[in-house]
Length: 367
Image 1 (cartoon, rainbow, N blue to C red):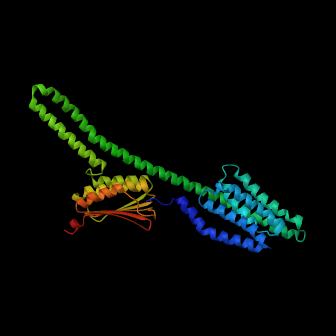
Image 2 (cartoon, rainbow, N blue to C red):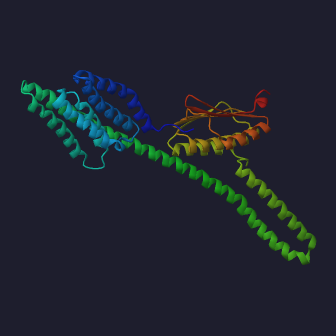
């Protein structure tokens, strides 16, 4: 029940919203500036490099392609200024630079100034090959490209900080979820200790007593050994039940525990009680709730969970379900067999980003 993290959603949203606009902008650059077919090819290469950088930025991997994309787009800009005579081809180098500079580990401000200076400096080279309209060339090739670059860079720095904050929140949420799972494991260990620790202590005392009685009272010694055997057998059964989530559970305690675990993991919880749960169904419904809680914490990126209880049923709905085929959840599969053995039904559904786990006892509800 995995899902895309918030940072990935934001990047994918940016890709969906802005990539088509940037493609259109790149086409406009090529069409407006190119005078021949080979001009169009060179300018097109710069646009493609810029698009590659944007796509990798949307995937959070812009630094991997930073150098080649910057080299290509930085080379296309002077070609456009000196050969083509077009003032729009700064589009490529300014776009790649504005994506790369905020992600540099250090010297980001210096890099931003250098990028702006490079674009303005290359644009000024236009004055070497054309003296017809100096003021117009200064505006078209120097001031406008440098101003646009400076403004966009200024906007990208807060954008980077915003993504950093989102990343920190995601990491914090993941740590909370891991902590919640650890708490559940500690609780399991505590239950196991309660079962076996008490039994081993009693077995030790009864074994010592049987050893003393073996020569003094053989019948009493046999009785003690019989009790030891029964106690060990019962402990084995309890341990198996605990391992397979079959131990009798208190539904109210499980509900409170699930609420605490979800809230610790930053997940909003809503509990709807349509009726008081019948005690006969409480044990298995509690097991369903415990297993589902563990699955959500381990496998999902949930933000909301709704638990609905009736006299003979429980339903747990969480968001954050992946849109791939339903994953294999062995714990719920085994639990479904036990619910069916008691005349109930356990259903697991995944649809529209939601995961629904429900258990009910239809035969009891019809009575």
